[in-house]
Length: 147
Image (tube, rainbow, N blue to C red; front, side, top):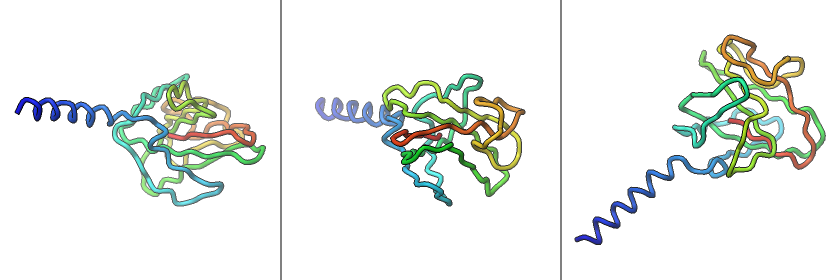
């Protein structure tokens, strides 16, 4: 009976430690100009998301990855189908074991689409500001992670 209790305690410890798993274990790859992505949100986020001007505190976080294949200016739009507010953080070439600070974050509560667009004028947007942030210059081999 003692061995069963020990095994149960060990298994319980494994289950609870996996709820904060590696970011790269839950990334959903997306392709250029892909529309209609599924919301693969995990609850809670496996890591704290802390930008240079704001910490994103949402409970449901979806993680996407894009491999860049040509020199370009990377933009994207989250097109809300309901009147919900969507926030985001973006990393370039992040290490899954140490994501570091995102290079773009946006926590705006402004209605409408949100994302990276040319002429936005900010790399980190707190609440109350624009729902758009500056695009990112990318080169082949860059990997973009969006949460």
